[in-house]
Figure 1 (cartoon, helix red, strand yellow):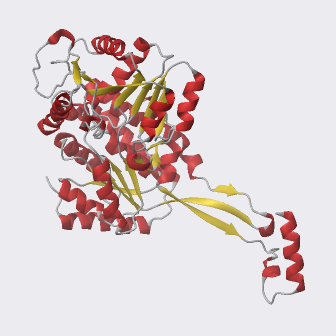
Figure 2 (spheres, rainbow, N blue to C red):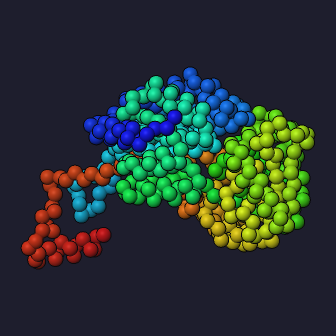
Figure 3 (cartoon, rainbow, N blue to C red):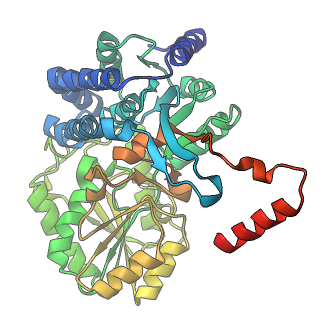
Length: 471
């Protein structure tokens, strides 16, 4: 079902009027809205997991539970626990020359927040920004992905049952609808998806001067130090890479490791995959690629790399033939040519290029010569080498000696930098991203501001001379 353009504008206008009619959204109402989402997850979590499985073809409900539903429950718990504190005005110190005035930041809702969510974690990445926007007191319009139609339809149904259209509503449709959606004059537009589409979203939003949060992706490096235990690292790298079959924005996109350790890493990675997924074909814990088109693209990336001289190591424990053509076995790629698409495009699948480096400087320079990544992973025990990499690289976030885990820490902001996006959410960072922190100065009746009024003369010069010595 597609939401027609007139209905799209009508829904926006309805929410816009409601947001202006109730600017001060009290704590009790914000909490009650969050509790509605919690009840929705408690009562319909299993149905949502089944819808995700239907959309993917192969994706276990347990994967959706840990990667979508648990993350949302954690976000809700943290928001409910801290919301009263986050909403309080924040006192700000007043400079000497403005005393005895006082100042504070008043935290207010922005108004109407638009959310465009992707298909890879269709419940988490739809409801996560919605929860954050509701905590901040906003109204929300959600445009979920058309590539997960069962999940998107169920989200529309469930949210429609617990929210009035002027609180939260869901818009359905393809890329053309998403483009119309992005052109609405939201108070904030939140987009999760590819860098290429993110550029289009930012361009559309700019027409209305709509501020945006862009959660994008890119080439997230995984750097293995010489001090690293390869077996210990391999299972964590395999888990981070193969969760959701690599269809994760912060999945390790390529591995950098000391030259000469490629074969040892290949063996360790194969053992790790066999531990996590004793079989690939027919294993519900190993997700399918979302569509035939996405699967064909991944195969084309491999074919181009192999034609350029790369060596492919297919990791298929049990060597079972695929029962689902989109359940793609992991592939390590060695000796990748510098111009291969695998090294320039975000992979978003179970393919992992392995690149050797000679020195730490060489590895750092390789990372820095490319757009800044959404995530960076480092493995090893050499604290000096770790600190050098942290100091000399810039990324959206970092996990040391593991993958993905920084996204699960509610008190760490999550977001990108440069080509991997801008703006952060999770915890208080997300609340503030979707909040207007209005500066307020309350003047005292004892104010001496008239000392700075014209006409300027000897008294003014004396006051300014004193202030220059004091500040």
